[in-house]
Length: 99
Image 1 (tube, rainbow, N blue to C red):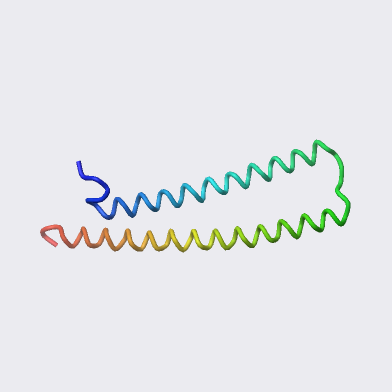
Image 2 (tube, rainbow, N blue to C red):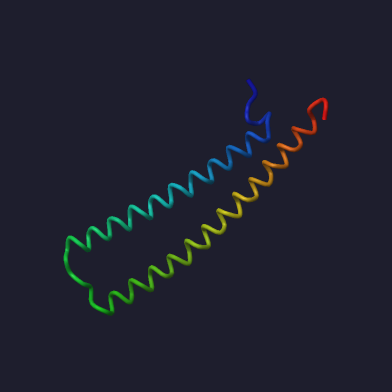
C-alpha cells in the first residue's frame, strides 16, 4: 500500500480535507456561540442599555470583519489546493500508457 508521500494527489486531497474540516468546525463554533448568546439573552429577559448595545455591535462588526478576512484566506487556500489537485490529476492522466 502506498503512503500519502508516494502520491502527491492524495496529499493535496488530505490538505484540502483538513482545511474544509477546520472551516466547518469554526463555523459550527460560531453558531454554537450565537445560539448560546441568544438563549442567554432570552432567558434573562432584559434589554441591554443603548451604550452597551452600541459597544456590542461595534465588537461584533470587528469580529465580522476578522471572520471575513479569515474566510477569504481559507477560500484562497482551498482554491490553491483545488488547483494543485487538478494539476496532479492531469499529470497522473498524462503519465498513463495509451494517452
